[in-house]
Length: 210
Image 1 (spheres, helix red, strand yellow):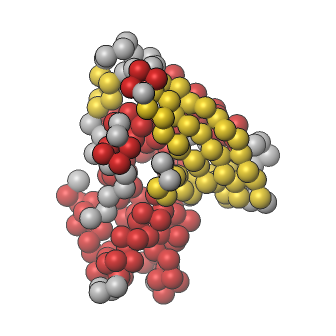
Image 2 (cartoon, rainbow, N blue to C red):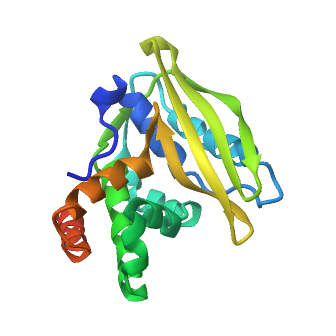
């Protein structure tokens, strides 16, 4: 329960990890800048990190847990993500419950993307930026992650919106699988037979055990 994209789904641990790291880069540009430039700038920072070690050397992701969490808190639009993942049940929640759900959803994402990826073995990877589509306050940035030595190509697309004058990510699609849709399906399955309070209880239990 409460899973996203497994290594088996993509066929390569690196594609999952690099997608993870790209999610936690800090906001570089204001809404006046192009969303593509936001993703480019952040991606370059990530590549500088993962290419800062020798080929074959292992980086322990957990050692950077708090650093990553601090950056994630600035970069993600967690309320929008939680609202979309919960769907119609969101508007039935009191403001206090909405706030709790957002916090639990953020903790759940962090558990899935950081705590489940122990290490990364350095290799030669690159990112191709395929362009952007902007419609008002919303944008889509398309990229492709390439690990030539492993013969792997993974499509990683970012959905952003303007909030408080900055472009922020509210969904990531890896190899056609939307993070938000993935959790929406899981939540809908639970809510078919149980209440939102039951769902929140399950999320508390999941995040407290991690």
